[in-house]
Every structure is written in structure tokens, then in C-alpha cells.
Length: 456
Image 1 (cartoon, rainbow, N blue to C red):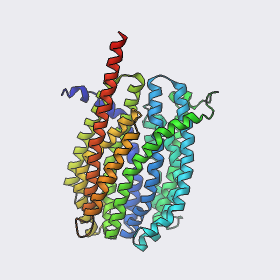
Image 2: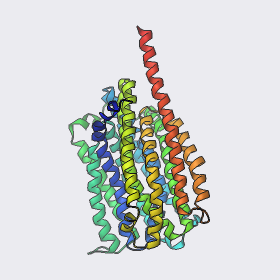
Image 3: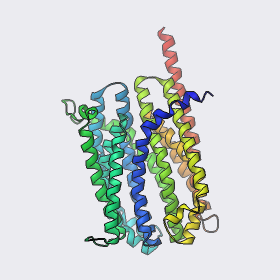
Image 4: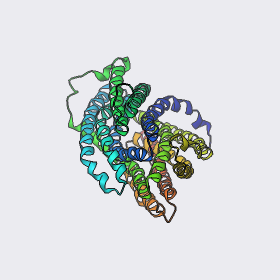
């Protein structure tokens, strides 16, 4: 294999991906800041944030999944130099995401009683409910933000969402500090204070992104309202065709990680707190892969618009190779620092010990997790979403979850067994998704070659 064919794309991949990576890390840093600040209050408070976010993350995965439909459609229109089509995708995408935000907020409010039936410690549930109520409302500004972000990503303008997210993180830290601990004139709200910090920062993040995009020349044609910009149900159907399966993909993956939270809760508060620490650290490295996954969607979508399928395949494989290298570095880091990193979160020695064991497994699935999310991104760029959704379900829920359930029992491997199931599911997903991409990309190249031969 001539690796230079692929490595020469690394620079372009990273130029597009690094703002997405930092922006995604910004979202995770909101949870990290909540965990670090709330963790100082005790293991029960940390477990409450974990439990409250478990249902929020499920809702979040659905909303973000729908918003991901905007990027490949805008990228394809951009590749074909069709501004009018890109504008229609953008306008309808904003409406769809706003409606989704309101619906997710209402669903989360109605879902609160579920927490009482998940066999979790009573003290943890009592702290999680008010936290979840406030964070649920932040779904509205966050979903609208996602619409603008995915639109800008589709045009390969990825840095503006990064700026908004990083500034919002500063806002979150400030209000967390005041509201969790009751500093200055602010009340001491503890766990609920972290939720209010998140809500305030997300409204700020949305306002800042809209302000920046509306003032840039590259976006101005898309902000205009033309005679053809009225509501078209065909546009919503197209967004739904891509968005619903993508939302299910994210739901299946987030669902199995949420199941890991519940399974660890059955083992006790310390196991649940350790799971939250390991999950938070793994999520930060996963955001690097998510950035490259979105890059795959953008670049594959562009090549699809140009109908340049040989380069489409080459560029996609260059992204797969790049994420493998990056995640391998993180895997080594997790193993080397497995006893050090958990100590930043809590001082409980049992929690630190359990978390260090989980990081060994997390190190191993970094590779599978990174590859599967970038291949999903490439398939999304091809607008192939239905079969990958089935693959995700089989990998996570027919392979991964049964392993987690069996080995995650106290008389088996405990918390570490839960994560062995996650490893099994992610590895199965990566393998099956690669077979799918390999088949589709070669099929497109063959069809182009056949067309050119018959034409001449």
C-alpha cells in the first residue's frame, strides 16, 4: 500500500477537523467541569450528575443525530456549487432542530419518574431530579445551535462553532463556581447550580454563533430569504430520511453507555462514580474521533457532489488511518496514567481503584471506537444511513450489551466486565461498518468506470 497517497491528506483533514474536535471537547468540558466541581461535594453528588445526565444524553443523541442530516446535504450542495439548494437545507434544518429542542425538553420532563425505577441509590435520585429539570431546558438552545453548527460544518467553515463553544465554557465555569458553592451574592445550589451554569452557557453559545455567522460574507447568501425559501415538506422528508436513522445510530451507542451507568449503579455508588470518571475521560478522546467523523462526512459529501468516487475512497481511508494513529496514542496514555487521572476527580481510594481498572479497557476500545465513528461519518457523507443503523443495533445490543450484562455482575468481573461488553460492541461495529464502506465505495468506482466505457 502506498501510504503517501493517504498521509498527504492528513493536513487537510486536520485543518477541517481541529475546530470540530475543540468544539466537541468544549461540550465534554461542560460535563468535565460539572464533574470536577460537583465531585468535591462527594461521591453521591458526582453519581447524581452521572444519573441525571444519563437520560439527558439519550435525548441529546437523538437531537444531534437529526441535526447531522444537515451537514452531508449542505456539503453535497456546496460541492455542486448550488447555493439555493444549500440555503433550503439550512433553513429547514433550523426549523427542524428548534422543534426537536422543544420536544426533547418536554420528553425529559415527562421521563423524570423513570429514575425512581432504575434501582439506583435513593440519595442519588433525590439529587439528580432537580439537576435534570434545569439541564432539560438547555436542550432548546443547544439544538438550535446544532443546526447552525452543522450548516457551517457542511461549508467546511468549522471554526466559528469552536469559538462559540470555547467561550461558552468560560461562562459555564464562572457560573458553576458561583452557583455550586454559593460565592458572592449567589445562593449555594450545589448539584443544581451546575445545571444552571450549563443552561446559561448554552444560551450564550447560541447567541454568539448566530452573531458571528450572520456577519461573515461566506454565509450571507444562505441567510437571505428568497421566493423559493418557503416551507417545503419535501425538504423535511429529506432531512428526516437522513436524520432519523442517524439519530437511531447515536441512540444505540449512547444507549449502551447509558446502560453501563445503570449497571454500575446496581453495583453501588462507588462503582457508578468510577464509571462516570472513566466515561468522562473516554468521552474526551472520543470527541477527537467525532471531529474526524464529521470531517469524513464533509469531504465525502463534497466528492459525492463532484462525482469523484476514486478520490472519495482515498480521502475517506486517509481519515480512517489518521484516527487510528491518534487513538493509539491516547490508548497508551490511558494505560500509563490509569492511576493518576482518576485522582483529579475524587479522593475516594476505592473509586480511584475501580476507575483505574476501567481505563485499561477504555484504552483498548479507543481504536475500535475511533474507527467506527469515522466510518459512520463517511457513510453519512454517502447518505447511506439505513444499513449502518442496523449494524449499530446488532453490534451494541446483540453483541455488546449481553456481554456487559453477564460479565458486569458482582460475582463475575464487576464494573470492568461492563466495559468489556462495550469493547466487544465497538469492535464488532468497526469491522462491519468497514465492510459496508469498502463495498459501497468500490461499487461507485466500478459504476463510474462502466459509464465512461459505455459512453465512449
